[in-house]
Image (cartoon, rainbow, N blue to C red; front, side, top):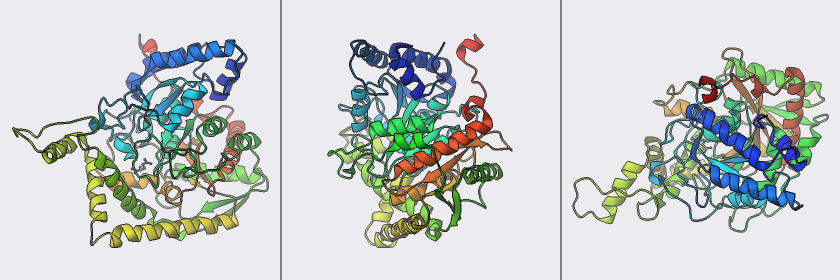
Length: 505
Ligand code: GLN
């Protein structure tokens, strides 16, 4: 029987008990990818050979009696923004087409050292800019719940891979919501750790003061197991926190909200949120209350400006980070058309014109403008001040409550193509997730049911103070258990079956 429907924790148990081998588990997932990824397009690159090699090595070491990491042998998918030595890494961009990193990111090293077979690299919006994966230069990923819908973004590939049972675990990155929003719209679990909780060394930077890598899974416990593995100090990242990883696994196993104070953020709900999203959120609140949590409404007035603040700070940092794609150092190089002896500047301009997509160009232009002399104080400087106000709103809220909750995303998965011509409505997808990135605090999204009107998954977001990531897992796992009792099976198992290639044969 195939192992694809098992959680990572269940696979780990079976591996430890010798009931299955990592080679079998890895092959099961490669078979699933072969069967469904033609439709889903979650992967940009596959490394079946490499994954099986790791799997066989882990199996041999286990047979020899070696003590292994609990997740050793459990396959994983990695977002294409993470450097993987020997595996093409493009960040979803034409400008990096065919680029093979000469080194591993910190978290790739961690995964390899712990013996997790890396199945491949997942699709994403170009340089992680977007909420639908439609800005990928390699075609969009499709939502496994409905192939005509977006899987969220920028990490739609990681969320869809996990949601379509192509991988039990995946790595995402979240600069404004790119782990949590895709998790919400695909019925999966996604966590953005505290800023600095997971090293950024070897991530292709979008906005360095906001970027954070984290787990994408089908259960809260699985996310905790992966978080524990990839978290911790790294001297190669100057913003990496030099402190132990919060006790996330312990918290996921505790799953007890009795006596906990949970705040509902007034500004992250209500008008602008789909009716079915609000209904599922309200039900979850009732469950938490019944389980003994104290629910309080809190107000964070500066959140009104979070989106505007983010869309100044992010483009500013991105325009500077993306300056390195100059046709000289990495990837694509094209000569300007019809110029016989082009200057370096002409080659750079022609390459950036050909290699970057529209959304990337739009943000480089905005960022460059916001940072230009004469405008710097008015735009970038003001945005930084508002960022502080947002962090202060959180600090005040966390004086009253242990965690905050909100819907993760204002809507369920929208139709592919429906927001492509309207950047503003795309940006609004992240209205509830962005404040956490601006303040550097951790956030988790978990599925809380499907919306009445369209039958698509709804996510609930839990937020905690910096370095209190364990609280996310405690609340998330408690809610997950309460919902499981209600539904009788995980939400994802209610997703419509993907027609696999075997089935259509
Ligand atoms: N959708 C947001 C954006 O386009 C968030 C992206 C992210 O978290 N990488 O910037």
